[in-house]
Structure formats: C-alpha cells, structure tokens
Amino acid sequence: MISKKKEIYYVVITQKDPLTNTWKKKWIRSGTSKREAEKLERKLLNEKDEGVVILTGRGIPTLLDFLTRWLDTCIKPPARKVATYTNYRAICKRVINDLGVHKLDKITPLMIVTYYKELSGRGLSNTTVRLTHRILKAALDQAVKWQLLNRNPLIDVDPPAPIKPKNEALTTTDALALIEYATKQSKQSGYTRNKVSCILLLGIFCGLRRGEIAGLRWQDVDFTESTLHIRHSLLRIPISDLARLDYPYIKRSTNSTLVLDTVKTEASENSIIVPQHVTSFLRHVKRQYDTNRMRFGPHFHNTQFVMANEIGDPYDPNWYRKTLHKLIQSYNDSHPESSPIPLIRSRPSAYSSHYPTGK
Image 1 (tube, helix red, strand yellow):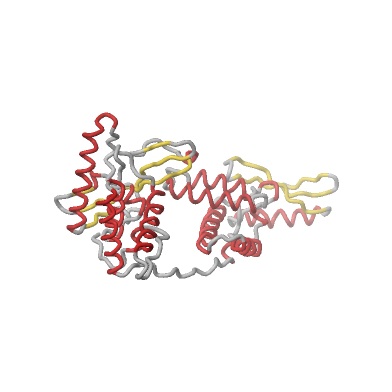
Image 2: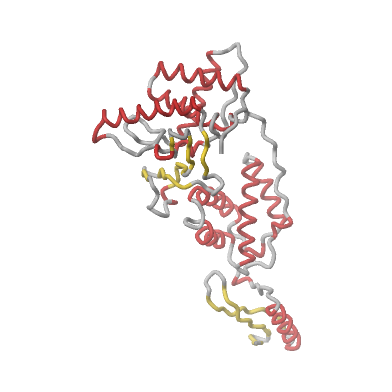
C-alpha cells in the first residue's frame, strides 16, 4: 500500500513483529514521486516474498531490549543450565552497559572489533573477550532467526586469537609430595585438613572438577565396585538467578544461593573407576560423616554430601580454591629447597594429567 503525507509518499508494509508476535505496519519513506514509490513497493514486496526481513528504524529493537529478551527466552532455565545462564547474563550485562543503546541494524563489524580492543584495554583476559564474542555471536544468530536482522555482523569479526595457557600439570613426584604433605597436615590439624586431602585425591586421581567434588554425595559412591557416579555439580549463583525450586539441594544466603544442579552435558555425566587407595580414604571420610551424624544428633544436617563440614553442610565451591592455595603456599614455604608448586588457577584436576582416570 502507498500512502501520502504532506507531499511525501510512503510504502506501508504489514509484517509480524517476532518479539511481540503481533502484526505491525512498517512505513518506508520513498519521496515526492508516486512512480518511485510504486517502484519501491514492488521491490519491497518481492523481497518480502523471498523471505527478506524489511527493517525500519521504529521496529528494530536496541541491543539492550534484544539481549534482555534473548536471555529470558533462550538461556534462562530450564532452557539452559543455571550456571550457563549466570555466566551469560554477566557477559551480556557488560555488553548492554557499553553498547545497549545501539539498534541492532546499527551494529557494525568495526564497532565490535573496536569494542573488543577496549575490553582488552580495561584488563579483561583474552578468554573473557573470546567468551563475549561467542555469546554475542550466538545472540545475533538468533536475531537473524527471529527476522530482526538480515545478516549477523559478527560473521565478519574474528575473535582474539587464543593464548595457549602454560602447562600447570605437576610431575608425578610433586603431586605425590603434595598429597603426602596434605595427609600429614590432616593428621595434625584434624577434620578440615582431612577434606583437603580428599580434594587432592578426587582431583588428581579421578579428574573431578571443583563443582563435581563439591556436589558428590554418598549415594554416588559405590564402595563395592570402587566407582564414582558423576551426576551433579554444586555451584553458587546470584539469588536473582534462582529460576526454579526443584533442585536436590538449595541453601539461600543474603545475596546468593548454593544449588545442586545436574552436570552441564550428558558427556559430563559418567562413572569413574576409583583407585583402591582413594576408595579406602573415602571409607574413612564416610566413617567420619556417620560419627558426626550420631554426635550432633538432631543438629546434624543429613545432606549426604561427601565434602561436608562437621554438621553436614556442604563446603562452598569457592572454599576449595582458597584452601588449596593456602596448602600449596604452606608446602612451598616449608620446602624452600624444592622448586615451588604452581598455584591452581582453575580446578584440582588441572594436576591430573599424569594419572589415568576411569570413565
């Protein structure tokens, strides 16, 4: 349809808005010539028949509006795991703060390349910038599917090249020395130090991640078959991200919540054959758990977590890194004649490359 307002001809196209799922009229300005308006109308109708999205400024959302809708529709649980949603939301919050006022069709490859350089200049790691690229590209891919864009501008943007991390795996000698040191410390310091030894054994000999160690429960341990079943991961999330209440375990605090969620992928859910000495140590930890349950009686929280404190509550996943750093620093200070053991940057299983793990 062609409409005229104050000597100006407009082509009016009716199209469904994918964000609101309602039909809206789009007014495309042509000019003062009716013939040119008719020519533009034929061109737009042909494009519409071919599936090309007809975009006008008024109907195109800003990056802020789009990312907010995308997170809520495509990422927020139960669409994706809560840990994924928390990470994606944090990245999108930064992007929105920096670029949120721009409409989707005004985002250019040069704008994004410049933005990545700015992020690096602020001190953000190469890994964080690459993650930002991956999330933003996935979001704008969805914008194309929702017919908000005809083409994703990030197709023409190369993310920063990955930086190969330094190999932090311990030698067999150093790994055994650290385990022996932790075991001696546990005999001297008692309950908590015993848990540090358990972290090392499960990380080094079984290859478990931090969240998997924290989320391991006694029903996941098969002492008869010397097997661990990896089904869950314990993580701390902002309380605002608690989208459901059917987690096997939830513990709220003021601003955040501990939740026991399933592992991210089916590939992560597996069974691990445990070395005999690790099984023996886990039997010792189980005896401690049962002793504390009888000792504290009704005050004991029978959560069934392997890595639980004396009253049965699980250790916060953030506790693991801090505690291991203290242990390694203590070892290095007490062995000045030896080469220092590097601090763990990611997870206990970063030290497991010299040890085979059953799957």
